[in-house]
Amino acid sequence: MDNHKGITMDNQETSLIYGKNAVTETLNSGREIDTVYVQKGASLGKIMALAKKSGAVVKEVSDERLTAMCGTSKHGGTAAELASASYSTVEDILAAAQEKGKPPFIIIADEIEDPHNLGAIIRTAEAAGADGLIIPKRRSASLNATVFKTSAGAAAWLKVARVPNLVDTIKRLKENGVWVYGMEADGTPFDKADLSGAVALVIGSEGF
Image 1 (tube, helix red, strand yellow):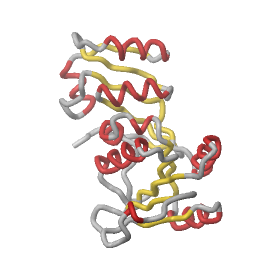
Image 2 (spheres, rainbow, N blue to C red):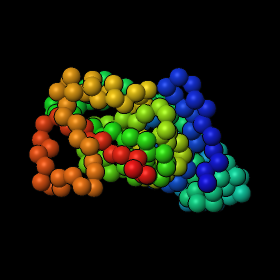
Image 3 (tube, helix red, strand yellow):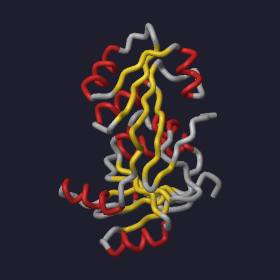
């Protein structure tokens, strides 16, 4: 279990991420990073160069220290302390689609409480070209270290909005011309559904 706890302040959460992919992608994304930790003796020249270029502090630490910080020995020899894991707004997501000159494609994760599942959804959404992901503030995993690692760094690129009320947010999306589809096992197969235009896909909780 990941024993790192973020400290929430308004719409930001401090976070320690770990793993070569997660740290590399976060550095490449331009997200502000305070400190990059690398294991002594590890061949991590690329990450160290990226860290120094970004202006982050680079600290060499022992394997034992890194394991203690990350709460796991599967840290890949590196970790990074984000200045803040910032959330976007729904308006930011809609604006991103507009800047691309295409209809919005949004994923709504409804009560996805397992951070591994949320990370996998973020990874898939980013690869599929989604403009952003919307999660509720309650009964949902947040952007923590496990999510960043499971997403293979995609969490550094995909806009994630955290909202107090999904029902109200869906109403706002509909007012902006977005068609909202719910994913369910007995529904129309996705390859037979007309998903053209502005679309939001609601992914339900693991238990229901």
